[in-house]
Length: 119
View 1 (cartoon, rainbow, N blue to C red):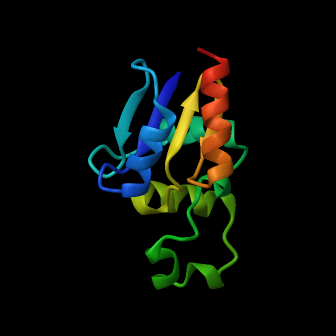
View 2: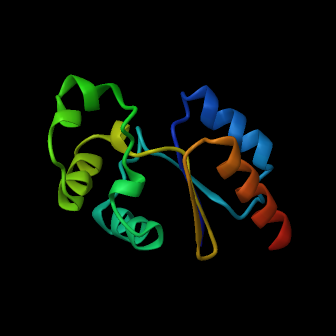
């Protein structure tokens, strides 16, 4: 599977799309207009190793809701991601059986190298 979960209105996501020069067979999903499904999230978590790995602690709602002061479990991270798209760390690229989460330069470079090696 080749899929890119992102926000169309996020300039960082748009910049990363250009930097990765993704092949035409990658499917794009704007998580604001097409919510992530339970099945999709479960598949992502399986590849990522946990729901927490997919959870954005930079989201405004994370601080506004006081979540940083709570002892959240993996089930909590799962539910918050399902409840609101802003909690999914983005972008998320699934390329074959590999997952790349977030926008750090290290992650983007790793994704770029992986794509080149697997074309």
